[in-house]
Image (cartoon, rainbow, N blue to C red; front, side, top):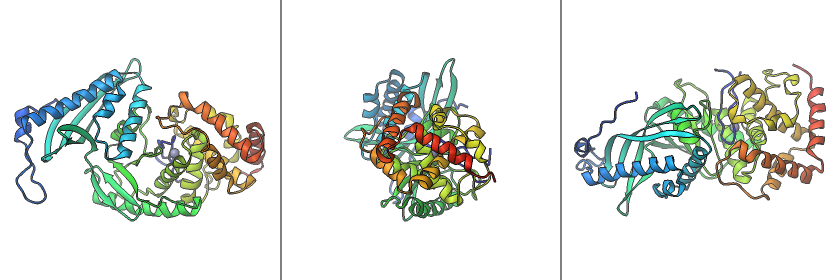
Length: 406
Ligand SMILES: [Zn+2]
């Protein structure tokens, strides 16, 4: 049984087929003595005591901004040359602001110079989220770069490899076999989406691959209660989990995320179920060769529910695999119904109409945004099809009841 990738324009994908903190070391003396030979064989890069202290200071200011909710200070500490990274961080902060967190700490375990004006910082991030507060701890390596005398956060320290349509950045822990497979699967996904959706990104799409699944969550949306397998938001890189199995097949997941990326670039104001439906129908299901009814994973009776039910669920709060599969499977089949009943151009016409509404740039939070986005979808349905959501829903219920159980 093929898996569905879950979530919002994040795709917190769950797969339906599967189910020390280390004490802060890092005395300044240790840092300064820590040299790294550069690729040209020149003398090892060095970091002065002042620079090491400045990197620590930047980290302290970042932690302070996160704790106090000072977004301007948080953004001021970032290198600005990669707009996708800056947007990812801005949304990360929005999500953090939608949560209650306490005891937020960033501890530099080691600072390794990479060049005269760059270093790799091993960071332990820890905090408590919610009430009474679930403890979270994650370790990662961040690149810091010195610009005009100021040390700035320049994103995770990742290795890089490219293919025809993708730039893959990945944690060094990902094996060569997985890296090769991800790029091969990404190319297959690109062609699958071009076939189903009619287009695929013309430029290279950035992928970030995380061997550490917790880091994937901590780097994208800390408020999600479950670990997920992929993430895509408008204007950002596609993020994914690298499975321990080097033979794992990523094509459906990557096709799903590519569709999120393209459709959200066209209209970011998609309510959650509609976004997920598009990504499944044009992405995952295109790779599988059909939806979950076709695959006999679900029966039509499983989807004999209204679109109001779909809209009532905060997809990122779903923590039950079966419910998640019904939510995503039904969303994708509703898009199939729209195609079969009203014509294959209809979902794209709905997107086109949605794009005429104001486009949201801040991080999506169901409780804050989804009701208004559902209203906009209703407006687009009225504009494109000339009917209300109640009529669309009634037509859907009649259609799904007419489908023969497999
Ligand atoms: Zn998704």
